[in-house]
Amino acid sequence: MSFQRRTSEKTTELTASVPVKLLTAGSAACFADFITFPLDTAKVRLQIQGEQPVRTVALAPATINTSASLKLNPTSVPATQHVQYRGLVGTITTITRQEGFRTLYNGLSAGLQRQLCFCSIRLGLYDTVKTFYGSLLKENEAGLQIGTRVLAGLTTGGAAVMIAQPTDVVKVRFQAATRSSTGRRYASTLEAYRTIHREEGVRGLWRGAMPNVGRNAIVNVAEIVCYDVVKDCLLLYAHMPNDIRCHFSAAVVAGLAATIVASPVDVVKTRYMNSPRGQYRGAIDCAIRMGAKEGVAAFYKGFVPSFARLVSWNVVMWISYEQLKLVIFNRNQS
Image 1: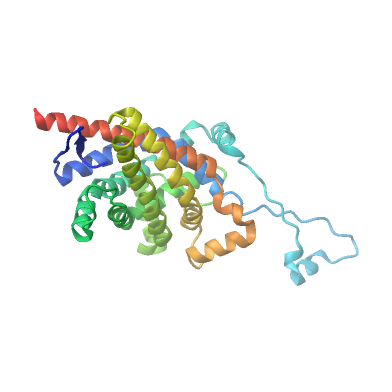
Image 2: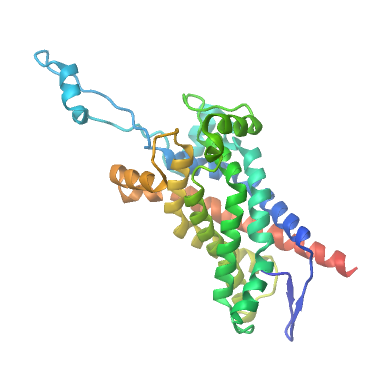
């Protein structure tokens, strides 16, 4: 994944300044986010479905004091959950039919802001941090250097979240809001930042930061490290040329790995970041209550759109990133 051109005899380092790496990574990520944003919106809607079930009260016999009965035993009220979204295609179709196609891109501005902050750091600084850890661990340069790569992925992924967290909070809330909802509605991302800061303080902008750090550190390892390792294996052992076929194959594996390991944390993160103030005591409380109420399957809600989104996002992002690197390399060599 690093700025390298492999030949049959040796590996030639491609040099690029840190600002160029940051801009290249951010640009590729923004393009991928724009292409796959509807899938992300569908994933968010499926993840928060079931959070606030619609309750219906059965008619009681005339001889029973219904109000008194409910006060004495409120848990006896039968609850039914309205399932509005079913599957990836069904969710996108429902949103488009009920709220319009543009709703699928709610929060796009915040999403692009997030990628410029987040992916620029986690991907743009990956090579630099990997080199730093490589000098500390002194792993065999001829090997895959798994330890070095994992540490670099954890570091850049966690650091990126701490900087880009407010953009993620705003993006999730825009995507979660429906036209019929009574929750927060913001006219713009700038108003959203101001409103959240005014109503919830600085902590509101960093709501869910810890599960997001965990989630994105894991995703960073699954995406970047998997891509890095798979690409090198394809180049070195499968003798595949360093072209779009190689990049596509490595990106699909990275997207699948990211979906499997990150889905539970991603669902908790989405629920917690979208929740009203005071609904949960913290991300752990959110996870416990969600599991008790909806079962283990709740942690994999939205898995199909999450898989579709992450795989397609990785394919678009990595191919774009690799092509941008080639443009920069050719320009530097001219």
